[in-house]
Every structure is written in C-alpha cells, then in structure tokens.
Length: 422
Image: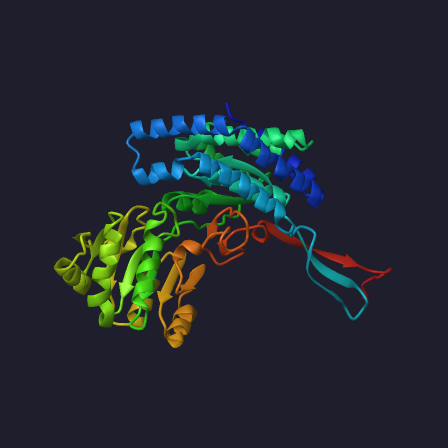
C-alpha cells in the first residue's frame, strides 16, 4: 500500500539536502540522468510499448496515443533536453535585488528552492523527465502522479532517474512516483501540506478544478489551451497559411496547438479556401460558422467542413479539428478571444503594427503572438530549457514554468551590530 506520509517525509528530507547543493553537483546529477536514459533506452521503449498496446486495446484516441508514445527519437530527445537543463544558468542563490538601507543594513532578496513539489499529470511520459530535471536543477524534490495510461513508462523513467541520482551520491527519494492508480491518493496528496509546498496539475479542466477545490496546498494551474489566431486584412496570406498549418498540424495533441482561426471579411473569400486546401493535406476537419461556413461550403479545398455547434468555440480539440469564424474586425476578434480563450496562447497575423499593438495590449494570455505560431509557447522554445507546465494564472508564474518559476525567495539582512531603535 502506498504510504504518502512516508513519501512526503522522505521528499522533505531530500529537499533540504538538494537546497544546499552546488550547481556543479546538480549538473553532475543531470548528466548522469541523461546517460542513464540512453543506457536504459531499450527498457524505456519496451515499457512504453506495453502502455501503447494497452491503450489501443482500451480504445484510446490517436491523439492521446500520440501524447503517450515514446520512440527512439523521443527518448534521445529526453536525454538531450536533460543535458540542456544542465547547461542552463542556475537561479538558486542569486540575488534578485540588493541595496544598502540608510541605516547601513545590507538587504537582498535571494532565490531559493520552493521545497517539495507535487505534480499530477496525464499521458505524455516526457513530462516525468521535464519535471524531474527542472526540479533537481532548482533544488526541489518531487512527488509525481502520472496517468494510469503511462504507468509502466513513468515507472521506468523514475527508476532511471533514481538510479542515476544514487550513482552520484544523491537520494533517490528526491524524485518519487505514486505507482498506485487509486484516485483516493490524489485527494490525499492534495492535503499533504505538512510536506508538500506546491501542487502543479497538468491535465484537463476536471483535474484543475479538483486541485483548486480540494487542495490545502498552493496550486499552479495551466496547461489547458483554447488557442486562437486572428488573420487581419493586412496579413501576408501565404505566410498566414503556413503559420495556421504549423499551429494546427505539427502536433495537434498538445496544449499550444491552434483551436480557432478568426478571419477578417476583406480577405476571407481568398484566404479560407487556401487555408482549407493546405489543411486538407493533413485531414483537418473544419468546424465553421456564418460567413466562414458559406465560403468553405462553396470551396473547401478538399477539406471536410462541418457546421460549428454551439459549444465548438469552447473546445480544446487536441485533435485535427479547427474552428473557423469570420469576424467584423479587430474589435470582434478581441471580444471573441476574451470570451472563449483560456488565456494560454493567442495571436494576430498582420502587417499593421497599430493592430498588432492593440491586440497585444488587449489580450492577456500567458503568451501573445504577432506573426508567429502558437506552438512556440514552450519552455524549450523560449530558451528556458524544459518546462514543468504552462501557467495560465496570474500569480507567481505565467507561461512556461522554467527554472526561475520553480524558485521563491528569502530576504537576507546583513548588519554590523545593528539594533532597531525604539
């Protein structure tokens, strides 16, 4: 039986050791993990193959299976990403600011680890490595709870991490995994405030709601993306087709993939058939409404076109489906996004800098794009290394949560016999 109290105690002890490590020791551990991933690649792939087979037998969607799948290339990428984290600057111990007060006290705010992170996530076993490496670099211990669909894969990866840590003399309990699929353990983890300092859920809206409502520990929410691109009347249409295709097709099963394309009426008749023809090459289904539906029904470019239902613009598709709507202009595009977006990744395609500026100022998503794909909202793409999550809330962290977002700070006060006057 899984004993979360024992796990919490062990994680807390490990976190106190990690907090005092030098950057060199932490990097040595990360490089050991990368080497162990490569050495145990066959084991990882074999365990993942069993997860995939079980998933197919259970009727999991192709999109979910893609999120679950590990290939030789993806495993190699895990090792490469781990080495990239080792190469990143270590924020721990750095001063955010420092100054000397009029009374001579030297005051600084210094970055320190948060402590113990509880991370609950679904599918995508690469998340196990992302979380572990970023947490270790910032001196945090972790208790992980992945989805049952990836249990074998995650256990293999955690075994690799713990083996590597022990090889360099660090506690394997710095990264622990809840291997029991009993949902009651999630509720127990959310109340483990004596040992866990932050909860990070990565999954659907239900998981986020559960964590917000039941956790006695601070929760960082995000990772749910209903993402938009608005193509205005000045956009380079060839470029816009490329960007929409990339945002929708490159990896449709992730949170920064495109869900809705909004188009200005002045270019809709020309742009929409061109966009549809390109997306048809990847079998994207278009859910269109109003003028967009009329244009696409007349010239679909070979794409499947379906009338949009009343809830379709509130869907994170995670599949080869795209909502399409013609809007009167920038104001209606902004209104639509503000009404339907989850404030994850939204953008404008334009050659009018005034429109771009208005859009950026009005849209308060964690990342706002001008003439670029929403797929760039990613820790690696932003130069942060791997990421623990993409936060869409407004306190502590927003956007990709890299190294700095896994730290807090303490005040350090240095005096010379100072006493506070009465």
